[in-house]
Amino acid sequence: MEQYIIKGGKPLRGEVEISGYKNAALGIIAAAIMTDETVKIENVPDISDIDILLNVIEDLGAKVERINKHTIKINGSKINTVKADSEYVRKIRGSYYLVGALLGKYKEAQVALPGGCNIGSRPIDRHIKGFAALGSDVKIEHGLICAKADKLEGASIYFDESSVGATINVMLAACMAEGQTTIENAAKEPHVVDVANFLNSMGANIKGAGTDVIRIKGVPKLHGSEYSIIPDQIEAGTFMFAAAASMGDVLVKNVIPKHLEAFTAKLLEVGVTVIEYDDAVRVIADKRPNSTQVKTLPYPGFLTDMQPMMTTLLTLSTGTSIVTESIFENRFKYVDELTKMGANIRVVESNTAIITGVERLTGAIVSASDLRGGAALVMAGLMAEGYTIVENVEYIERGYEDFERKMQKLGAAIAKVDARDTKAIRKFKLKVS
Image (tube, rainbow, N blue to C red; front, side, top):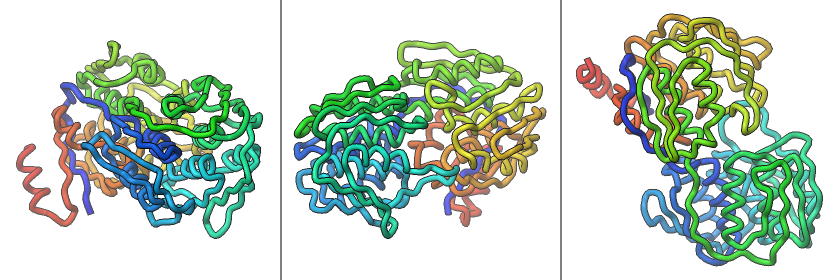
């Protein structure tokens, strides 16, 4: 079992290059099988979630060719089944996009209920509502989402609550339905826009992505395309907050600053300097952060995926802060691990964290229980005195490419070691001491 070992106290300095957006890539890879022509996708993040989804579509019969670490070609002409029920499907949340993709192309899909991080209830009722509105019969049977239609017809669909997954999934199915589909109260996240742009590059007719009303005119078929995925706003935010937490000076490159505005605003509010460039942001910090209040909201609000990093930064604030989680009820599971390091955090009513800033954190053995909470624990290790060991790093590697290497390039004292390799752990401690 691999783990990260970290010696805290070193400010991060230098430049870091942000990878392609995981959340966009999952939807785009699913969409790529909707044409019988070859699709070339660039800026694909080299992470385990992407590998898993590529294995799933290969099991369906699609041909996947890796051109290099970040470029793939996909051809869906040889797909021979609409049933995705392999061991891989249940490992990631993004596998549910195959329902919309297969239903749109073949008018039938059977996809195992998805897995992913246990951060709270993520119901698929809005997905089902959307598919049903398009004319599909949808059932949950034997752990599978089973959708089938004689034909799909455009419809007006209103989501009671904005949902990124449902917006993308219904968009996939609707782009090959007959007539026009309108999705109201649609999610506005950047990766919704990226998936829509990719579909349009294949010949779909989608307008309004990025607003709360998306209009889709169905087309009979899609064609091949070449497309480059947008930068990962969550990875960018993670390195921005890590720079601030370590009192460092980091240039975060290959970003779209517009996508980072909610993070930038909060960093400025707590006293961190943020300088924006055309495709980069520089984060500079030289003192403990001020206290603040944060509430997670759908984009363009402060994203739930960045809440653990915000909370961790505030553990060393000069006052008392309040962080309210309005999206997922189990997102504070990492807090117990932070308290092992000396953080003073009290979670009330399961969705509000009251953080009283302390002067220092101290190293401890902590365990990641989800992707973003795990990244926050690494960030806490950078802030802490002494050595921190973060277990279950496989969660972190689901969503961050070369995480420890990028941290090392910025000067962090961090290494990935086998938990059973005591020599490697001793070697690391000798090296950094």
